[in-house]
Amino acid sequence: MARSKPQITLSSLDLERIEALLAALPASVFPGKAELQAELDRADVVEPQDIPPTVVTMNSTVRFAIAETGKEFCLTLVYPRDMDGSADRLSILAPVGAALLGLSVGDELTWPGPGGKTMTVRVQEVVYQPERAGDLHR
Image (cartoon, rainbow, N blue to C red; front, side, top):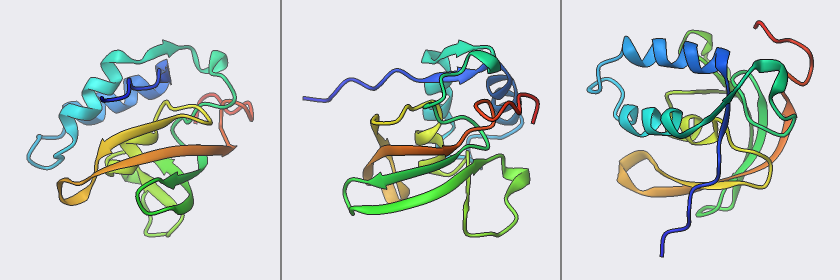
């Protein structure tokens, strides 16, 4: 039995920027486009200042684990233009990045991973969140 997906929360600013990004990308370039769009469509959208402090937003630094491998990561979720080759950044267009967006600490979400295998992403801590830090217009 498939578990129901956790509720996701997005800031209106992130939503606008990600929808603009998706509109500019053909599905052939970004295989997870339909899944990410479906997540955006079901999200609870709030103003940036109303985002709960435990929600993963764009430019948040997140500690998370992949259940299937037991591996833990601490990465910052960024837009593709902010990918600078550093190992601590994760693009919103990467499967894990798309899965993390909008989740809260303690949530897990099963998501299509590379090569068609599914992976279960579990959020352990939001180490840094721009909204929580008062940086609402990043």
